[in-house]
Length: 387
Length: 126
Ligand SMILES: Cc1ncc(COP(=O)(O)O)c(C=O)c1O
Ligand code: FES
Image 1 (tube, helix red, strand yellow):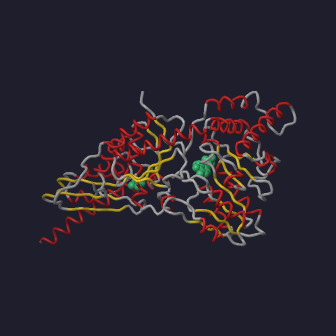
Image 2 (cartoon, rainbow over the protein chains, first blue to last red; image 1 turned 135 degrees about the vertical axis):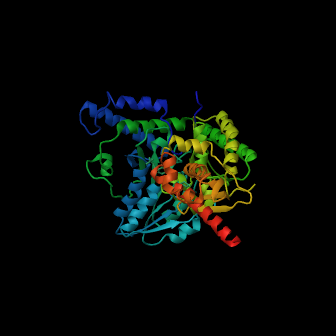
Image 3 (cartoon, rainbow over the protein chains, first blue to last red; image 1 turned 180 degrees about the vertical axis):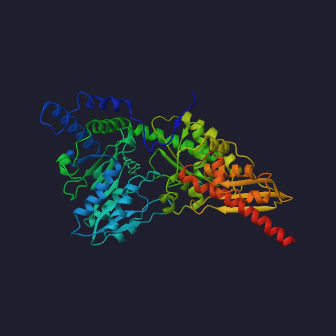
């Protein structure tokens, strides 16, 4: 059988078997609508509220502050647009960064068309948002700062507590997209000092299409969808009970051995990086050398375009991602690499390896053994690579 | 996105990779869409393209179209070679995904530039 190695856990993860097992009953015997009064509904309602309590516990929040959504994208949209719309009287200025996920960036661009003013903070070459830049940008009209916790492409972790502190001093709401950090490291909304936080189940071995937004008590926010009184009228729509149960179960599982898994992944990525750079010349690490989630490595292989490497690895059963324009669908290189000032040809040459639970040191050895040949074959073909 | 079997075959086993020493014509094209680069070298004898080689920094489609065009152009008269269009390269590869059609331009444009280069060099020598 062909060997398959998945190194794209930042794109999505497989549902953990125990998560699936926890979800299944709520498609069949526990199918009730959580809003119904009868026993069928009550059973679903109990599962829903137990899940909410679990999620709250892992985030160190109150269950009343957890709102279930259809995923990271909706959570980000709700936070950004919701706060902008509800706080129009106070002001029309929002601050975010240039390296956010499109769910935040496009929400901001949409608001720009509505007349809001958006500041897109630059980052340094490691991908970090500058503390002083943020401080300078906050003004009287600012209603929201939205800066992501861990970046999906580079894995860079921003010093959220510090940045959020600046917003708090000025009485400005702070949202963080923690879609990539949740499940990979401890998340505590009070330590992070945030007012809102987005997460998505499929990034931590839960199902796709379900996520949550933590909204600190007192935050004013307009809903995106209007309808029934679900989620305290902030997110209308019959709750996806099996998905929500799966989300909570997945969080429980990743928290059960988080420190051990963090250490294991860190050692895998470090070993991988060491072996790759020993065997292949002209490989560069993108992002911050240490302020990174443990599973992510973004590397540029000078002189070769990312998609051509992906295809070669795919032929060997290995799944990775790239920030190259050729793979983006929009034919523009990664906005994150551009914001970090990575030159165009190196952005074209970037590959993202994101490790996860299924990976072992054997996978590292297997990929490290195949990669040099692929890179040298492509470099021999490259008009821009000189040894 | 799925590539045709033919694209994958050329991508895996690209023909005529490399450079020609003292070529009769060189065409270099940068892809304005995604910033990729292709360099095509030709050897011409008696108004016929007798050899072609390429170097490409680009995606799977760019590599496959480069490889295919070197095959298509070999042993063609200059007149025939000039008629090789963006479309004919894509067709020879059993098609390209819609968002990759611009990569086939890379190869055809590089070829036309190489022929132009050859003609310019010839004029200079005359
Ligand atoms: C940082 C970040 N934010 C938001 C999202 C969107 O999450 P979802 O796929 O659940 O909509 C993703 C995942 O692609 C992400 O990586
Ligand atoms: S060379 Fe960039 S998409 Fe083909």
